[in-house]
Amino acid sequence: MKINFIPILIGLIFSPIAAAMAFLITYEEYSHHTDKKKSLKVSFEAAIFTLIIFGILSLVVSLFAF
Image (cartoon, rainbow, N blue to C red; front, side, top):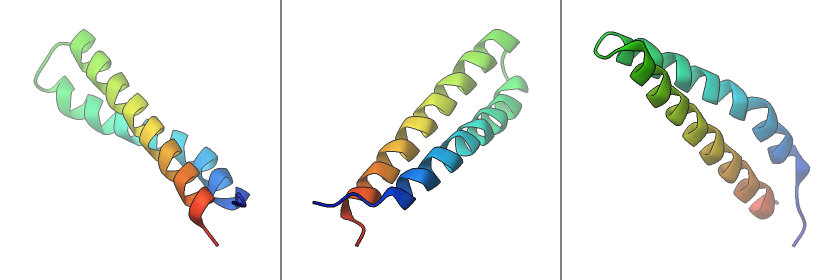
């Protein structure tokens, strides 16, 4: 099985951007409803989850891309 490195490169570039956007969107929403500490915790969890999911997806695409 041959690995295509372009999807990995795209994943390395856009995964942190997606994680930062997930953090900002989640923090903005939760800051209206809860205190700052809980908002930061939930937003950080959403960012980490987004980073992991996008990383896994880019790895899977790189394994199965032609």
